[in-house]
Image (cartoon, rainbow, N blue to C red; front, side, top):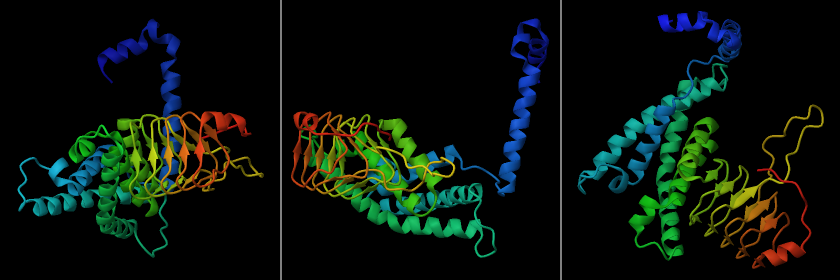
Amino acid sequence: MSTTYRENANSDSHAPWQLDRLVAELRVSRAASQQSRNEKGIREMPSNEALRSIIEGLFAALFPAHFGRPDLSEEGIDYFVGQTLDATLRELQIQVQRELQFEGHPRDGSESPRARAFEITREFALRLPRVRALLEKDIQAAYQGDPAAKSIEEVRFCYPGITAITNHRLAHELYQLGVPLLARFIAESAHSATGIDIHPGAQIDESFFIDHGTGVVIGETARIGKRVRLYQAVTLGAKLFPVNASDGTLVKGVARHPIVEDDVVIYAGATILGRITIGRGSTIGGNVWITSDIPAGSRVTQALARSASFDDGAGI
């Protein structure tokens, strides 16, 4: 403790804060939390700094000519990708292992957290070519769907929807592989950068495009088909949250978000809630509120929405 702090802590001007009491109570709280974590066998939390570096490494490996080194030759790209992937996957394995330990990975002797982390990381790596192929279709959909887009490179570099879906497709694979904490970090990194909030559990098919994007929310159990286009401030949320009758806690994992079938367009500000289906080829107008199934090929406008009967109450 510095001399300045000692002097200030003992001065009359700091008496109203009751620092001695606050420091003691915080110490007790930390000790209780540490004891709980020790009982799970926790060693270290995943590192935010390392995860940011992992995201950068994955972007560079997927698109080396755009997010890698600027001086890469055609002959050097494969070497760069291999080197970048090796370093990135090694760090990812460490962070996966930390999450497994943090979540109290079973220690029955069948498989150590380290071995399990290696298997998860290897499987994640094997999925990267498919992820990249999906992202190329997303980029093409954005270029073809926006008359303001002058080039593929503009879309890849500048469109927040592409940043968001790239993070999502990476996060979704980790979520499926059983490391939801790392997946959520990657999703929230994109959320902070773009204003687009996609839960890593959401299932999104190919050629997906979010135009403008700010304020878009896509919930955990949402399912989105091929060639779907969303505009800013669209919400695919839950209408209500089931609770356990015995103790009132929320029921986890229940399908509660919309299904959006192929070739649907949803315009700005639309709010779609609950486990309902928006039928293939439908167009949903701006600022409508929908809590009922929409048949395939429909065109829903504010006037139609006002004339329909919708339930109140919503949650995301």
